[in-house]
Image (tube, rainbow, N blue to C red; front, side, top):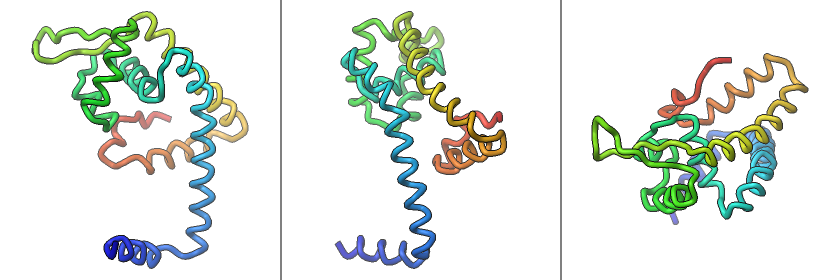
Length: 166
């Protein structure tokens, strides 16, 4: 308990009330944007009995065909047990297949099957339309700034995973 109080006290000493209020506004914008960004895909996923973890797996396997389970775990930052449950369901229902790596038979390479491609495209298009509509209201400089802010929020070790092409 004392460590928490010290941490709070130290944190307060580094941020003014005005800065904190400004950051709270940004935090709220991020919360509401994320809520609305995920709402439509969540509804689609629910129809399959899937959740956001399934969406993330489908998305990153689609973006990285042949990704290993270890690489996926590193990106998602979840436990093997959590991934195993989600992956098993996606494999059993024909959205993803696991292929043995010809160079290293111990590794499993993940690929989307046709059903996986279809849902990945559907979900991505829904989210892309929302982002595109937001971008339509701002100029190219604001779009670049938005992406730069998001990259700045990502842990430094993971920033290289996201293309910096603007």
